[in-house]
Length: 255
Length: 256
Image (cartoon, rainbow over all chains, first blue to last red):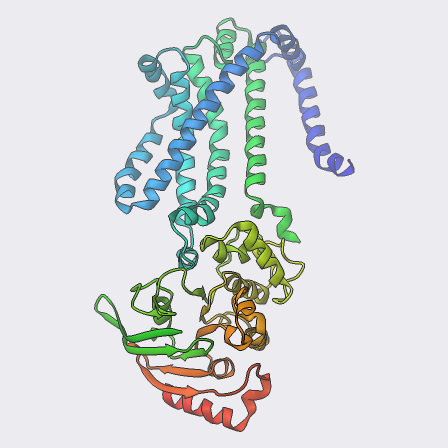
């Protein structure tokens, strides 16, 4: 408990002070600056629209989760292909890089044209965003496997399946998780961008509707919910990494 | 029993091994010394079946992965496995159930000076402990033949001497053969493992082995065979005995 107070105390104090300052400043300049609503006003907007949020949140979460799933599967697959065949690396590497040079904001409207207003274009946007970091860091893990380690396990008579289970998968896991951690925040943003362009539900739709209605207090509600969602997913991946890669835990290193 | 008839190895235009014949009777310990880069490790990899599989014969069968337990200069522990689960890697790779392999490994931890460290990660162990764990892994794999490639080369001099004496003792114990053999075998002496040790340390070779082969610089050929006919386990101060020093001189002369 005392440790929690020591760790969380200073940032909590800082945030409280920031919110207070924001409140005071927003109240003083309210008439001149409607784009910056006071925290109290945002809170009221949150209470007013709280009944709408679960639905939007669920839609964004679904698009993110499915997109992350597709992106991870595609990323791991191409990591395996690229690290198994040098020729595949030469052919695919430039394509992978090019796939990342087009901004999501540019791509999203096109995807809506091609794949409609449903879930599909959001999933594609999220998958595209997740795919690259996961592919690169997983391939890094696979290519970083010590060849002598592979030879040793092989010398005991291990076949491909055992080698995969004993060496390749554990070697690739930390890279997979760090790639996922990097891409998750972008993944949520990708889903939201997809929704702002055209959707029936989702936090992106909530955002764009609020914006068109000049309800900046609601825009802030949307932004905060999106931020919290990203933080929650980021923490989830950290927990998964902690569970599945116990040898990487910091606390073990010091003992 | 290990047999290798007139081995030749080329890596492209590079001739690495020329006409090497090697024969180690069951339960005997053979050491190979030679200048670094001469091709000793290549010979060991042929025996392990990793290179030119089938050219060497292990116990009458063509050498292939899974016939001999291999240990390198680097411990090559898997960083993602705790000590106990690293000890079972060889046995699991050979197809033994994990549970059974663990039980076998656990019973050996004490003798390898690793009791209490079953749940440690490799990075938490000292260099000497890691090397003992790597050796334990070869014992749990339960193979008659051990192939050791400079197993103590990366350790400091004191730890190395410690482990040399300890390895000699452990190989001399009646139970050091594969874990089930001593119950079948009428003579516990025959359960001693067959070992090939590659090293650049002449003292180590003569102290541990029954026979020492001296290799020439690349391409490796056998330039001398020196017997080391002392009873196991041997005291560390054997290195100062008169005839031991004479044998050492013979090896050093052959090394040139």
